[in-house]
Length: 93
Image 1: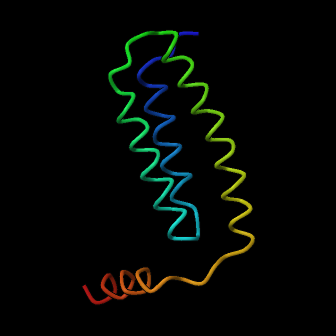
Image 2: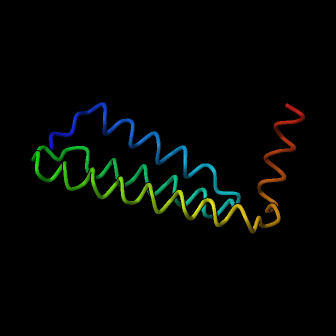
């Protein structure tokens, strides 16, 4: 299967979108950072077979991420101090 740049971009955006749905700040930031770093480290891969493997791995990670977000939304944690400070600065700004 040939993976186009458009498909990779859609996967990247889907992973970022899903990562941002975590209610827990630490998980949310971890998965956002991890997604960016993973795509950044693999941006120079030019072997089509390797790209296809990485793409399929990303699709599997997206499915796992969707399940984890769903589970974490069932047990929403209290907001951290940093989140309330960020929200207060948005409200006053």
